[in-house]
Amino acid sequence: MSESACYILMLVMAGLIIFGFRSTIRDTRGSRALFSINGVMVTMFLLYVWVSAALSVLFDNFEFTWAPHYSGAENALPILLICLFALASYMAGYSFFGRIALSRLRSLKQFEESLWGPPEPKMLVRVAALSMIVIGILLKLYAILQTGGLDESVIRLSGGLRENLNIGQEDVTLTWVRNFSGIAEVAASWMLVIAIRRRRGLVLWGALFIVTVALVYLGNFGKRTYLLEPLFAVVLAFHFYVRRLQLSSMPYVLVGVIVFGMGSQLLRAVLPAYMNNIDISYIDASWSHGSWLGFYFYSLEFAFFEAMTVTIYESDQIIEMFGSTANAFYITNIEPMLYLIPRYFWPDKPTAFIDMGHATTTLMFGGSPSTVEWGTAASYIGNSWALGGPIGTALYSFMLAFIAAYSDVFMMRATGENKDAKILVYSVLLFAAFILWRQGGLGWSFMSLVPNQIGYILGFGSLLYLTIGRSRRSREPAARRRAHWDTVSRGP
Image 1 (tube, rainbow, N blue to C red):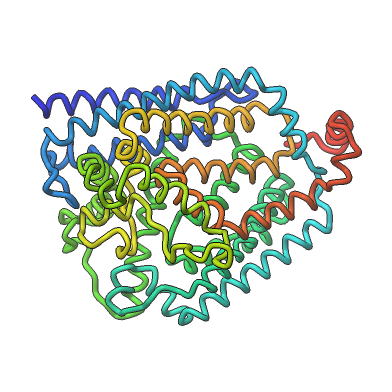
Image 2: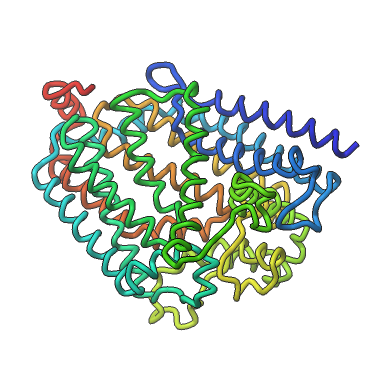
């Protein structure tokens, strides 16, 4: 009986996901864009809920790989119901807030007009962007050299090899150097976006973008989340300036996402092993199910459903680790936001911040939240349910829906044709949506968005100021700026 109910819920969820994609707010041309905040949210439900659950429910007879004690249809059924509740709450919120955002479109357009810049970037902007790229690349190379050079940086791509060879974490100072080097990503992304719009300078700015992204991947130990903002910016530039990407392209995009994920993960395993003359076999990995496809799909990359199951069923034990529900909420959602306060003003500032994922890792693999080096993400569904039950999950879903609706209206329904700055803003919003859904908490999301991206934020602010100019914004009314754009260039 439980098995049949699980199959029905999987079918219902698949239908809701398809409906969710088709609910994306239409753009000014009346079509539904593929790359939207709503698209990212629904894709997360597709990959990290439906596919993650299907690996156990549909393809492995309800057996779990990383949390085998929770196997069985009777354990999966309540979790599927909770996931369906979260998806329905998000979709209802997106529809509600979307209507409100559309009714306030005029104020959003006024904000959008404030981001307009001249069609041709000023020479000062080009010089500043090139300087940021050079400085950022030098900072990245400095951090790589100070942590053992290229060889150790490659070894750090593999967590298991790094642990076996006893290679420690980098110094805090080097972490900040790496964070500030983010000025290179935003500058390379911005100039490549402009090059795509102008159809000029693609080779130069494209090459600098590729070099920068490669160093980001290497310098951040193969963490692919750091690649999302620049990649989102380039894809959005292609969408707005070259060819519109509509929902009909979704199958190709999903294949591309999976190829990117699988390729980057295999690179993290193959390259360090090759440089250290170590033979590895994907088929022999304990979770691979005897195939290289299993090596990827049954890795922790798609263990969200199992992590949700553990987090939800053991929520009382997780709360006990933190002392109380209020203390757990403070430690995981509020305390990390205070990270930027200097220790001089906060002598008791923690040396490390703990996330709900650390507690989930403790339950799945042993240890304690304060000693494990990494967390297992249970997404916002598992974390919000553990902290607040159905009310907490619904409220978090509504928060994501609010962000998605207003962001999509801002990007898709605004009329400006020179969207360079908007594309960079929207790429950050896409990244924020991804992090908020995946991490499932405000605290760790803040750490990923602000301290870890401080260079990206500062670089973006600087280029935005140089592009628009404070004095120009205060002197020229929006109508004159619009007329200026219409006179100089109508864009593609």
